[in-house]
Image (cartoon, rainbow over all chains, first blue to last red; front, side):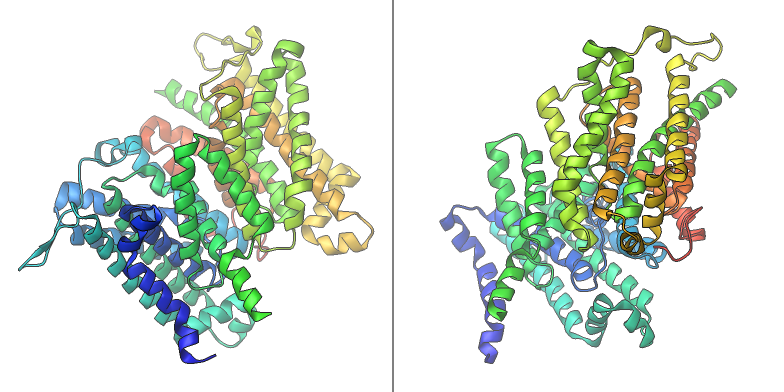
Length: 316
Length: 288
């Protein structure tokens, strides 16, 4: 395969994303749907950094996503009406919480790790749910919205202009994805793959496995909280359900559906998930049954995901 | 104040007994099959609703006897069709599958029986308080404690005294060897799953009598059950029992002093246990 052939899919993805607001309406979508795909795709790709490339099963990423959501919402509502500052607060809150909880759980493996991440995820949910006076409780945090970004000379109106907001999301997405791709190509990323493939052998080679898993966990949670801040800005609202366990399950199914072992897999999974959700919830009230059935069918008949199947076809 | 404390302590103990009953079933399935059964709460709800349907026909006692068995049969079928193909695969897949199943069961109960809280009739002589000063000591609550004690005793008798129980315990330690010794591990896992679901169904009938019956009853009880297992130590059934009672009492006491933290406190407790003793209170070193 020549160089262009190898880079072909990457170039295609970036071109599609770059011009998305211009072709999405044409196929029956709308710009904020595209932003939603990109935000949830970023969350699923960040989760997959841990799940697919380090081989660690986290089922509690919604907690850090939600910290991003509430970080930006609370900052804009109570502290400073600045979009960028709010995002910084959300990301830092998510990363610090992940770093601390990571210290507690980094030695656990497999289903034990999954269970503890699920359980820890609920702490933040109950805080958001119960601390009515600050977080708005079950009703969510409303009464705030994203602010135009002030660049000194000019300001970008991301509130009124959907396209401008889409490109803000795309910039964040690009930076995050580029960092994750670079990390995966680096010796650090190769070490993570080695841990995924054979943890015991990696340990015998002198690799500090726990430290690597901790780092991978924190990086993954940091980008998930970035996605959370963008999600809050997209909705102009913070919903306690954004940090509940069902949200974590959604991220995992996106990664599995698109293909956990492929870099772009989770983005494709997120696109399918978001479009389905948009369509089905307008058709029926039984969205929960539908998504439940969807989970079951994907697991039983489509466990490799879209890109997993395609990779297999082309390899054979 | 003393009475309030006593009331919440007792309440916590009862809730803890619930968590323990549910967590024991989860733990059984987890230990033998390595499956985190997210749908456990859904089965609990099914148990409650089945009892609700049966009460007009066979009375409370009949429903208490029959509903958990029917729930267990449903569990056997679900294990056979949906979960068996996933053994030996990445635990991620069984987790996702039972996750989806939990959604289906919750939405299904809502679809069939409606979203509201249904009245659940318990015998009158059980629902009246036994004494005036200790108003919270209703017969039903005492009865529940007795029944949980009976169920847990029964479970440990099955595990320690019967052939099935011995095989389950042996399989938990080394399933391959058990299989080589001529035990059909497919049937063993199936029955074990059914046993776990039976406990969920039983907990469902009891919970319906105390909390009222609504579709979300399962999903509110499942997270504390996970915490109970983690605190008690993965792989240890006595640990799970201890964990359940402990978090029940902890959240009961917190209700007195700081009500809005009554849910969060159990997670703090879990964090402390993981910090001091990562394998859980009674967990074995190096099993997970």
